[in-house]
Amino acid sequence: MKFFKENEIIIKKSKFLGFLLQNTNENEILQALRQLQTEHKKATHICYGYILSEPLQEKFFDDGEPSRTAGFAILSVLQKKKLKNVAVFVVRYFGGVKLGAGGLVRAYTQTTSQLFKGEK
Image: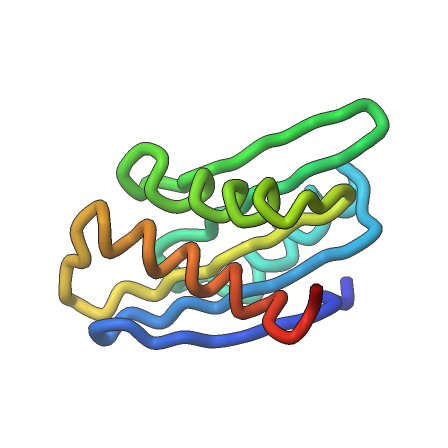
């Protein structure tokens, strides 16, 4: 699976890798998740959020991060941008420094937002 866009952010020694799928559907999202799980076996978390339009579905997954600090942060960016048929995955490699709930929300939000930098 080829992702539309990718980025990397390092915050307090944790590495956050963002992956964007556009014009996607549920099957492609599951395929992309399996691919990331295979390629990033040593990752601590693989979180995601997506919005599909037919029928309307909004979903997020925190993958072990504290509730609503990761996947919900990703989904919130997609909602604010009013996007449809889009999925964002963020792969986290823990760097040994806890970020706290607020730090996690900021990290996942920043990683997601940077995937759309320069777009309107």
